[in-house]
Image (cartoon, rainbow, N blue to C red):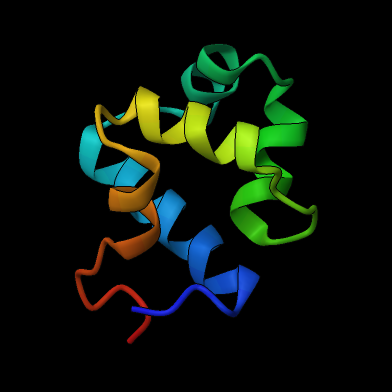
Length: 76
């Protein structure tokens, strides 16, 4: 899956969070953001830095590359 569209990555992150059973508050704490700021990542309302993406991937126990390439028909 290409990550050209930032909203695709936002949807991917939200789906992975849900599959892991994490709440937004937990993810926000894991990566050092407020819940509001984290929520904006999932909705695509804010830009995601490489550092934040790497922190999110780490919270899911995966590499940044795996996060960027992960697919599960989440965009359908």
